[in-house]
Amino acid sequence: MTASDSRRHRDPERLPKENRKDDSGAFEVDVLVSPSPDDTDSEAFGREEVELVRRQYLESEHRFRALLESLPKVAVQGYDHDRRVIYWNEGSTRLYGYTAEEAQGQLLEDLIIPAFMRQGVIEAHSAWIRDGVEIPADELELKHKSGELVSVFSQHLMLNEHTDSPLMFCVDVDLSDQKRAHRDLEFATRFDRLTHLPNRQTLEVDLDSLLESCRRQGNGLAMLYLDIDHFVEINDALGYDQGDRLLIELARRLRECQRVTDLVSRVSSDEFVLAFPGVHLEPDVRRVVRHVQNVFREPFVLDGRERQVTACLGVALFPENGETSRELIRNADVAKNRAKLDGRGGLRFFQQKLHDELVRQHYLSARLEEALDNGEFCLHYQPQVSAASGRIENLEALIRWQPAEGPPISPAEFIPLAERSGLIHRLGDWVIEEACRQQVQWRARGFLDHRIDINVSGRQLVRPGALQGFEDSLKRHGLGPRDIGIELTENVLIEADETVLEDLRRLYHHGIRIAIDDFGTGYSSLSYLKHFPVTALKIDRSFIHDAPAQPKDRAIMEGAIFIGHRLGLEVVAEGVENAEQLTLLREMHCDLVQGFFFYRPMPANEIDRLLAGFVPCHEGLSS
Image 1 (cartoon, rainbow, N blue to C red):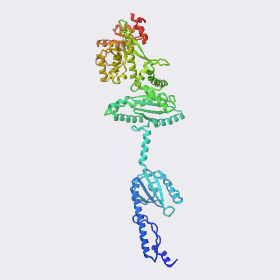
Image 2: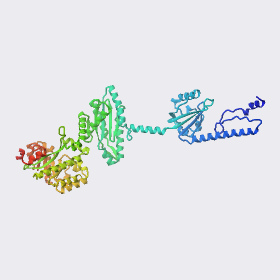
Image 3: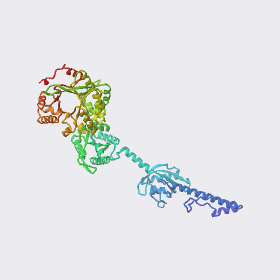
Image 4: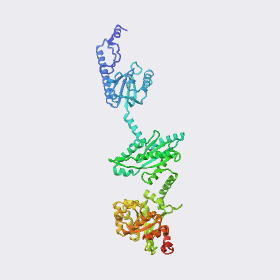
């Protein structure tokens, strides 16, 4: 080593300096360049080169800082060997609430690390510095200045690794929006948005768990299926917002009935299910039912007015009526549907026969259309007889279903199914066509004095042009007003819209006979008799049955006959089954009688023999 070399190494200005920050906060990098004593130009050039490298480094760091600050949702922090903050960008301020000044020099674990993570973070940082074990990227919940937890995805980077001055940078991405969206989605899949009650899917899961607990403890459980009466009418009349208010208030009241172990769920638009574990004995079940029914005693305020609301309830018990959540819910629903047939506020407990009946109805509904295609329906005819002369005046057409296999199926069973399924329109059209075809055949055989009356369902009249179709059938078969008449129930007339009433008036003025069937069992209002186009009344069999022994029934029957006659209407008594009833009707001057005492409904070929005189008259008619 020469003297000049020795001097160079002892010159403090030429010794390497520690890496340190300059006034701008940038990390300085010193580059040692020893100029040749023989070449001062080279030394100047070297200094310029060092300065150029330094400027480029500072510019690069400024660009890096600008990049970090331009990412508002990306929080970047820098920490030194002791985990103290040396860098804190604006994104970190937005995410954690601390300004750069507040964060500077603070320990990582004191600043944003929750207490339960503190020791683990310290050990993980030490292991990275000491053993090179990197901290993996992960989703974390770190601490905001307010103390609340913040969901982030955190990535870690170590600079100057394996030196005395390692720097750890953390890049945190805010996951709050994604977590919130995930929570909202999870809530939407498990709970009802409007009432915040568990939905059907959640109910089934929670109920299965509750039933398992009941099995272990040997407890029973009562399930109630609740259906608000005429909820659609509330929505239609008052608007969906008022319907929603009703549901929210009802949910609040039901929660008040709920013990900690009970379940309450909204399973559809206007239906709720409640489960009460440990409730099994009849007195306890009745008590729970009354408790739920009492929810409706207080009126609901809708559209600024108090309105009384009712609901039907179906009850199923564990384990008698089902071992699983789905079985119990289904059977409680079956009981509820049966309760709805009883009217507002109905209550039914599940019985196996209800389920058997439902299965049968489902089977028949599926078979109805096939039966129409296969010609399994026919018409029977029951004569209406003059009470005075014994002469057969009219024939009521009654539909019958004789399946290809098995016993006949009652109209009382399949007509409601046809109405609910919409097949009543096709079935009604078939009845009209068949009655017209048969009347044409009888007219051709010389049976000219007997009208056929057919029953028209209210559901048929819902279809526009139903009565026009009836008229078209008469014309197509060459029949007139004396050949075919129609029968409607009181309720059908009351509920008919103006279009249907106009069609009925047109038929009336064309001479078509229009009878009110089952008179006295509908709205019990006589005022409609002077407004609606009718020509006859058929007094319901329930009044005829007990009239000889019950003065009230006899008075109602006599009053109906009197009013009908004063209004110029023909009066028919249905369900006449004995001579005593016939005698009473003759005394009251009833026009026509119909019932098993005279003739049962008969197929067309037997009516042929009756009209032709091959079958003798009933002995009751000869008197």
